[in-house]
Each structure stands twice: as structure tokens, then as C-alpha cells.
Image (tube, rainbow over all chains, first blue to last red; front, top):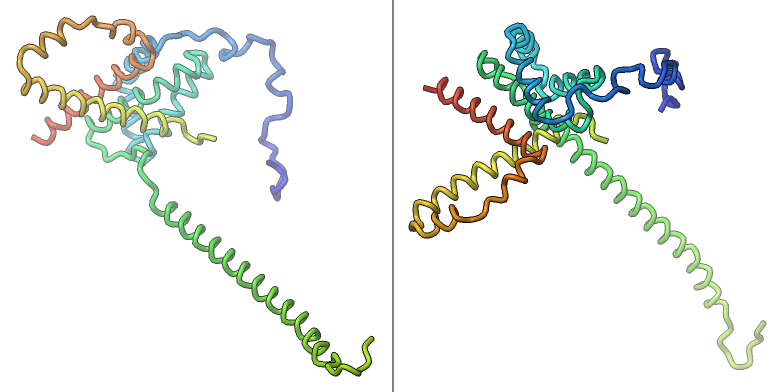
Length: 174
Length: 80
């Protein structure tokens, strides 16, 4: 991971950093506050119905930040704070996204969902595939040419040898 | 490795919601075409959905559908 770096990464976690606190001392090492999807959904819906939250979300959506990214950040931070576990968080993601989009629709913002197809990247991928296939074709054609040259090179002295071979009945043979 | 799980999960839920909406519309068409016997048979069927509703995925889907319904209603209102 760090082999191809030009500069050393000083902000990376130090090995064993997660073990510098007592087990159970962190919120994510404790039993989650909400364990069922119903509780978690109601927690998020209740949180999002707040006016200040709607305002902040509207500001974020106006900057064209994808809804997927906001939802992911929300649920990850709540996992970290011990509100719910990862499994329930994943299940709650579409609910969070739908609520964010509801806020976006109600405020009339043209938001980015984040599930749109990135055509530029797709074109790049296809162009890459085409380039790779062309390189492979070139390689195979070059190899074929080399093989032909080698074969020709071997055949030539054989022909000479055949020409030098005596054909008469009384001729000397080696 | 999934870089953003929200994208993958949302796409699955979105597809499931669309399929469910399509199924519902097809069922209502059938109900209109069929006579009263089929409707009565469906009503007398033992309802095994009580146990299914308790699944976390179904509960999540229920919430998702409810919010989407509200969104669609809002969109319709804004279009008018």
C-alpha cells in the first residue's frame, strides 16, 4: 500500500493504535443503543425532521454533494458513536437517502443522487480495453513475424545442403 | 471492495420498489378482469405474511416505500 508513495504518510494510523484504550472503552465496542431496524429508522426520521438539519442538508445538496455520500457519512458516524451496528446501518441507508431526497424535493434543490452512470469513465474503460487488445494484437503479429523469420533462416541452409547433395549413383557420399 | 455501500444498497432497494409497484399495478388489473371468485379465494387464503413482515429487510422496505410515496405525492403536487 505504501510502497509506491513518494512521501511518507505521517497521518496514517500507527500499528496497534486501536489497542491503546481499554477494551469496551470506545462507543463502538459497547452494545449498540438501537438494535432493530424500526428503532434506527425512527431515530433517523426523527433527526431529519428537525428544521436546522433540513437547512444543513439543503446547503450540502446545493453544493452537488451526492446523496449517497451524505447518507454513508451519517450512518458511519452513528456506528462510531455506538448508536447502531453496521448491519442495521446498511439496512437503514436507503431510508436515510430517501429522506435526504425528500428534503431536497421539498426545498426544490436539483440534487445529485450518486447512482448515476459515469459515462466518461465507461468510455475510458472501453478505450482502455481497445488499447489493450490492440497491443496484444501487435504483440502476436510481431511474434508471428519473428517465427517466420526464424523458420526462413533455418530453411535456407537446408536448401543449400540439398543442392550440394550428390545425386549420381557413383558419387561419393559422406 | 465496495467503495460506497449506499450506492449498491439504494440501487437494490430502488429496483425492488419498482418491481413491487409494477406487481401491484398488474394485480389490480387482474382483479378488475377476474370475477368475484378469485377475489374471494385470495381473501380466504391463510395469510402467512405476518411472519414475513417481521424480517428486518421487509421493515426497511416498508419505511422506504412510505417515504417514496410521500416523495411522489410531493412531486405530483409540485407538478400541478
